[in-house]
Image 1 (cartoon, chains in turn cyan, yellow, red):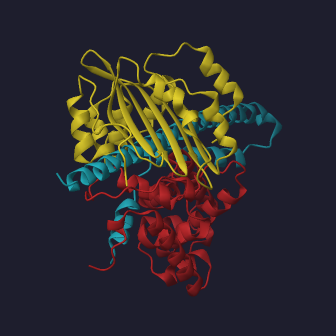
Image 2 (tube, helix red, strand yellow):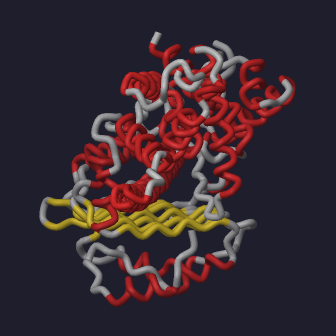
Image 3 (spheres, chains in turn red, orange, purple):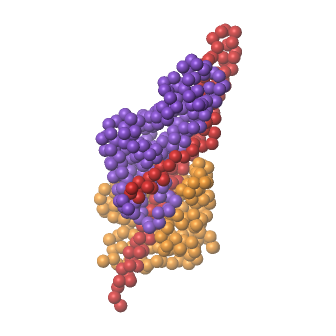
Length: 109
Length: 187
Length: 185
């Protein structure tokens, strides 16, 4: 087993979704189910309209939340990339120093 | 990641903090010649938003979250070229000029005969370090990083690792110190 | 037992609307959410997108419970659906967010294997692989599937699985620091 494969196993370990994931799935499943069971009788029209409003409102809230989260994730990606580049160049700078110091030490008196 | 001209104009309209490097127009023109470009501009509000989505528990994101906690901005310009000679010292000369300012202390300044160079500079306000600039010039790659804000040097440790730079950053040099004299000949 | 109950829910034995079925389905979600979310999260390297896809997968399960043959089948079905949804989403997405492999800085060499950012960098590298090698690497090292299982999940011949795996690892080794390229100890 190579070290790369070891590190990959560690890096790709399972992780739990954000808290409340199951609740959000159930909420969407219930919303979908309610939409499918919308009453057809004329006498229940008001209930159908109220349900539709709730479903739409829930949908809008979900989309806004989704938009906010996507924005946040994109921002996080940018930060991680910036930090990676910074770290890589700091190490490069250190390596350059080591190269020069090593050369200096080898110089004869 | 392509910058927009509008974004650049907006950045220019806001007064820059002293620790913030002003990128010269010549630098941004290099994007046209580069095969790969990274252009990152993160202000305090974006950093705050990103921080909310970083886990405080996991090692990797936790380290980054601690680092960005006191930051006001991060700007990165990085260009990768197909061949050597696509940029010149003149393209970054104004940046080097800014880094000669009184409050900038360059703890690393290495320049090779072939033009390759690496500079790591800290902006000092009293005993605090409130800015970091990294300028790395390689044959086919040029990178400028400017971080403004209160730097947690312990948090930077995970990015620096090697003892030489880590120790210097930790101590937060109070005086200008160069690891080697500039223009050191490399045979 | 609860998984079997959920599986029976649409065969007509137990109506979907019953609270008990909802509880069973919720149990299925909780039981498998880590697997589904992890595959999507490592594939996209984006939590928000991963949650969106993971939710869609479970909603699809909700709609297709009648096709589930057994509790063991649920895991396979979820893995396969998640994998295909991830790949399809990536293909459809007009604003591909992944960073090209060549653009990522090479991981500098360091004797310290405990670098907290190293695994984050590896995850980013994996998420920048082409879609098929990416999913194969993910299923191999994240889900610990062998080549035959991966072939069944992705509906591809075993030799194609190996080809994608070798290609993916080769691309990762190219960007990995020297100490990660060491072969068998």
